[in-house]
Image (cartoon, rainbow, N blue to C red; front, side, top):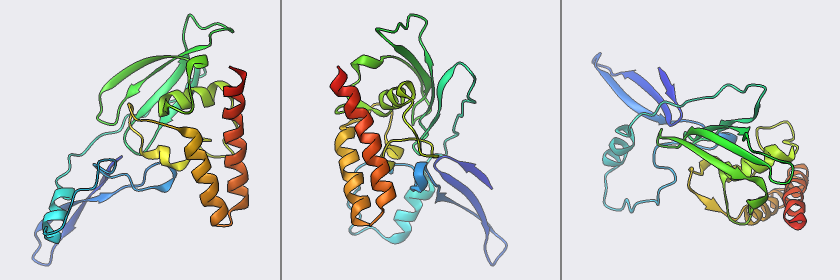
Length: 202
């Protein structure tokens, strides 16, 4: 059995001794399913047989994840369920007035990238996951024993996806309250407030 970020390749022996191969959904960030094409708009499957749908998933290209081991000079090293994986370090020209970081890694398609991010220019109302991770790392936001202070939906964001993280926090807090998860709601409230404070200091 070979594991990858999109799922596991599992070999199954049928009754006649023949070998079959299928792809099974894996688990992404925060325990959410991370299978090939999960972020794409859902296609209309009306009229398609179950076998056709299974074959489409089973024939999805396998993808090897790259993981960067965190070193002392890194602010962050990690990724999410799409295969996006990166690390963040201070840029050589970073100053106290203009804190600047460099993010390097691979996107959800396995393509290498490098981004220079000026912390003070990050807008949590319209940011990418890499930008928000840079801000989170720079500010030292408490991750509450987890991997991130950001809402679970970020586990399916690609490199170029942008969203309003403040709206995402509001939705997460609302969902946690609805589920009577008071501690989780309080934690996301704390996290959201840290980013509001950042925006208010600008």
